[in-house]
Amino acid sequence: MEVPEYKRRRTFAIISHPDAGKTTITEKLLLFGGAIQLAGSVKGRKAARHATSDWMEMEKERGISVTTSVMQFEHNGAIVNLLDTPGHEDFSEDTYRTLTAVDSALMVIDVAKGVEDRTIKLMEVCRLRDTPILTFINKLDREGREPIELLDEVESVLKIECAPMTWPIGMGKRFKGVYQLYRDEILLFNPQHGGKIAESTLVKGLNNPHLDELLGLQADELREEIDLVKGASHEFDLDKYLRGEQTPVFFGSAINNFGIAELLDAFAEFAPPPRPRQAEQREVKPEEDKFTGFVFKIQANMDPAHRDRVAFMRICSGKFEKGMKMHHVRIGKSIQVANAITFQADSRKHVEEAYPGDIIGLHNHGTIQVGDTFTQGETLKFGGIPYFAPELFRRVVLKDPLRAKALQKGLVQLTEEGATQLFKPLKNNDLILGAVGILQFDVTAHRLKHEYNVECVYDASPINTVRWVSSDNPAKLEEFKNKAFENLAEDGGGYLVYLATSRVNLQLTEERWPDIHFSATREL
Ligand code: G4P
Image (cartoon, rainbow, N blue to C red; front, side):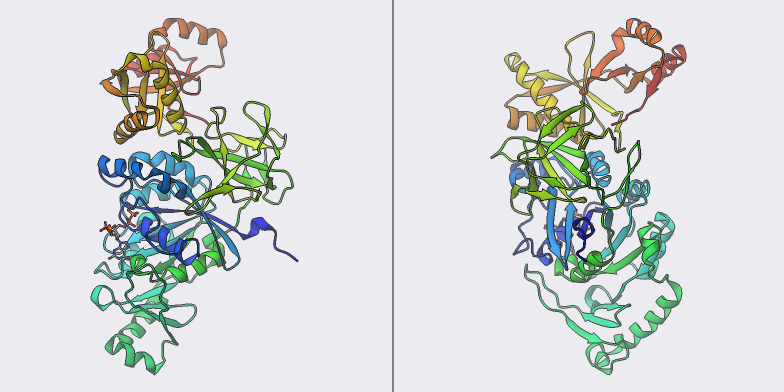
């Protein structure tokens, strides 16, 4: 019997601390997956790393770099969808939301650095949905920490069992390759900086005398170490991996193309296809006939050549067909989708059909919000990552007052993406931007200038934090609106928020208004 299309899908994202090698691995996966011909085609390597200037540089190459938001390729019969996530931590909310759209994740760890901050945070997000995690320990061509010690660290800090799938033979200058525990094969390392794929030498069997000729003393060292590893580590257990309790671990050097092919093979073999997904109303199975999907990301002006806004939708069940009608649940309307797009490493093209696990791009004219669910008529809502109350606030000041309309438009469109949030006080015409990271203000100003031709500067804002406001008691809510008018605003989605000037102010207001609910997150 033919395998249903959705079962071939492997939809994942890479989680790592900046500099561990995410960009390099992405590129090499595309190379081995045949999606690109030569490494070096994935631009924006320095993207969003440390300084604003790096990010701005990337912005210039935006047309190329952001088409890599979703990358699809085929490997060993599997259709792999790799979802890119921003490297900079000021964009972490974007990453959290993207993680709601994947079925598994690849964790990349730098052999010299071990488990780092960002990895810990991202792992916490993965744990919310028990996302299965595969681990790649990178940069074995450099001196690093003892592999056993690293696995211990992953187990104790990230609270997940490790099952080594390959084991490194030396490291740094003595790095000779890896032993594949379950194939009883040795893959010998052949430094390869270029973009082409080189065959590694393969030796069958740990006890093969040929190994002593090739490795000298390191052959016996390896045999002893493997004995030890087998005794001290966990055996690979597919079910545990799928439950998110165990991570299979691979070693290699991405920049040298080493260990990537094995990683990709294992990924196609073990990583889960789409699984049933919980909506508020019921569980939705990928094999259901009817189409469902949800939007996890919105990006404005993705491609300077198109200058459009794209909503990224993850398909959860059924099948997408060009021209089909979809029901936009939040606003209760049907739309006909004639020109959804897919994304490939170097281009975008129109989708004829797509299946659960796939990501399609819908053209958005402002009606679609992050978190929106689409169905074929049923009222369903997939839960996602909410909006968090920002911690930093700036008042936007326009340089040329005649550009007020363009500013409004730009801010509305850019804040739709979710990285920054817009607040409009009820009492005046101020525009207040909120963000979780300072870099986002610079990026917004930069994009306003380049994408909307609006120049603005920022003023300090007295706001300390915001809370979304609601109440089961309409009369009390009205009363609150009147009394607290000076401190109220609408957010970009039209929801009511309280602007607190200090923690104390917030606390007092909460105490004074027990019938009003003050929420630090806005549910999508
Ligand atoms: P990121 O996306 O996770 O931030 O990491 P990225 O791939 O950009 O890699 C960070 C740095 O680590 C890069 O060096 C990259 O070349 C290097 N790197 C990646 N994989 C390996 C590896 O297997 N071995 C070694 N030795 N280095 C590796 P860079 O100097 O910061 O950038 P670039 O000048 O090479 O672009």
